Image (cartoon, rainbow, N blue to C red):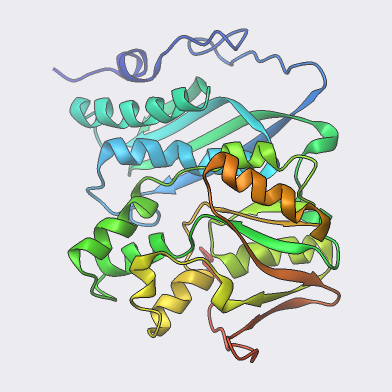
Length: 319
């Protein structure tokens, strides 16, 4: 006996929502923003075959579906509060739904996010979340605030997700240990929400790295109407990538691979010591990788100080 759409919603996607005036079950949710805050809103869509491989583990896919949206909240310095989920399913597979919703809600509970609505329909597997967060209006992190002389920082390591995908696609051969080390970055990214909150009042601009470091830093440079110098030897790469740094593909993974969901941000030199303390408090590596300069564009320098020729700057769905 097949499950109905409304039973599917009730069984797998309905949870208590004490932080909302009205949650799942009506034509719309009713939300009350805390006094002194503004609402930060973002949407991300994950499409089978484009953002994840067919046959992906449903628990990890549930995690990632929410994680990529939490990463947007982190980049704005916003505290995530509510989400809505629109999902197209080829069929109502109850075992798959149980695992997907378990992964989604495990991460939602970790970050205090309530699912307050959405939609379901039959079709090719497509997952779309709209997330809502709160941030004091004057403390929201934006792309447009970078200043000449600011340091450029990134959290965590770069390139692991792209390296794992390259292995799955047969473009590079990793050892079992190397793949095991970098696969979690692709399958179960960790949104840097705590870092985003800590950067309020310190970072001058911020963005999450979803399409590749150079592409996403480029959005900060465009919005701030400035340029940047990066130092390739300073870019944080995991041990799995270090073993392949002689490969052009590895360099591409670090600079433009995408799917990292780390934060790239700028801050005045005077805040350097504070950022070091934040890194220690969060037990999260923060690495200075360059500086903001007058002008346009981004130049990446090698160990000898020479500009690197970078062919691909990042992922673009329509190129």
